[in-house]
Image 1 (cartoon, rainbow, N blue to C red):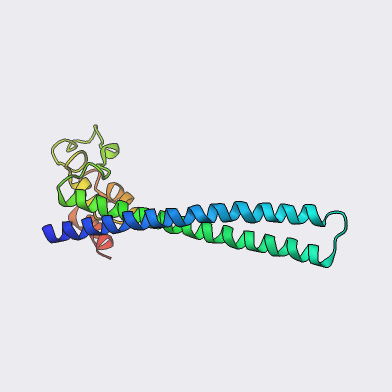
Image 2: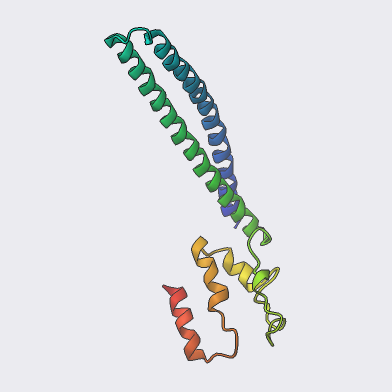
Length: 168
């Protein structure tokens, strides 16, 4: 388990350095966007009295370069966001390995105080079964657990369809 934790720590360090490197690159893109936008405005200003072919070519060229640098910046920012999400997942996994489930939804919203077994079984709340299962389920499947659990006394045969759905 320590090897897994060390692996996640190395990934967090790698992702952190990669984000800082990409942020520096994005700073250059911001300066490039400002520069080429100002060049585009200048080309409009200089070509305004008489629109010659060279003036129009310069306007189109500076606009094209500006749009290209803008596209590079957007791509860089989306890559930064992707790496930040990967880093957050690694930090969540480190917390999970340390036994800290507080970062995951504990299902307290689904506690039914009128149900007869609400407080007998530790299904929802801190350190519950829901919190542990919720830690390993992907995003959209997390909502299945509270809806699939039997609210009243169900037969085993009726609840087996729930288990089969989770298996697939």
